[in-house]
Image (cartoon, rainbow, N blue to C red; front, side):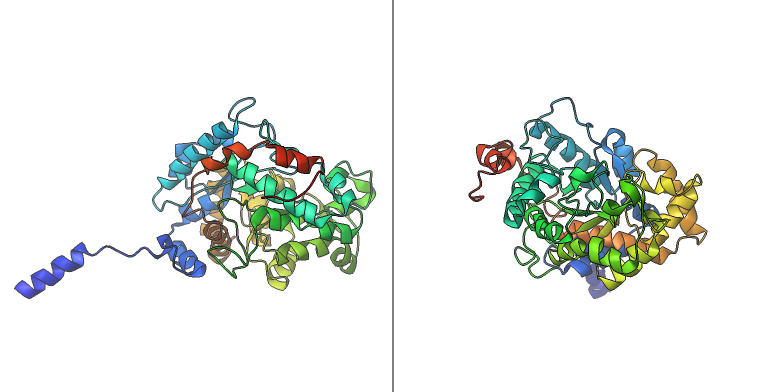
Length: 400
């Protein structure tokens, strides 16, 4: 009896090994372990991205929201400093880490030509200007500079680069395209390596994605054909054969994938009349299955709302098409309730939910968020520094 008592006492005092919290474990093992511990509510929460103005402990701790972003012009206050941004993101991170499983948020912003939402940041030429240089090494170095200024503000993810191939200058967003020439756009896609670093360096050596403490997660957008719409109409219809779509518009994504891009954003536009936010052929069969993309696909701002007046249909059609994270951005409570209903009713298979959450968790693990969830305050002095301003005026040497 004494022996049994001692044995029971030892077992009671043993501490459970939580595999997903161990940075020495393989990424995929950590993903599977964490996913196995999650409830449907926690999985649904990870699939929602909300605007910073509605972020709260109730959302991030209580509803397990997985990501926050800021709209253009949405800031902690007018002319907020990098330190104020970092304090805001860190506070939100503390709310997320207080949830049952302590899954960190990933915070995203449109740092499309420098950290352009941050007052005092270095602003680089738009893509149309950079593309005119035909200088892929310049693009990479601008990516490195932007990454440092984004991380200085506590942010982990930039919704860049835009690798649209603009085929009609009447497109109102043609300045977001590096060129009408697919090969030029491919050359400038080297900015991905500047944002994320090399996939052959760091803790996750050899892994297809990497974003360290001085890098940001990149997002190739807008998948796919946004620059080829008929008559250059914004959010219009790209009318072409699949062969031309691949040759002109898909090819820059191959360069982004080769550099380990972590995320890809769906386009508002259509391909031959089919909205991209519900296009399973392009998102799942082409991007994920054929091209082997293992990161997450995120919707554009309220992009799923364009599919129908029936919001449940919007959720079902987009997620079943292969979109993993939905940029809600405000009515997240309705989104979570409707998503839960759709899963419980069988309209969205739980296997599709698990695939989406695996992809989200994978990006969070390989980006180091679980080990380094908070801002890097040592980077505050790089914002708007003279070397970066020299890059912006193309007086380029190298990033030290």
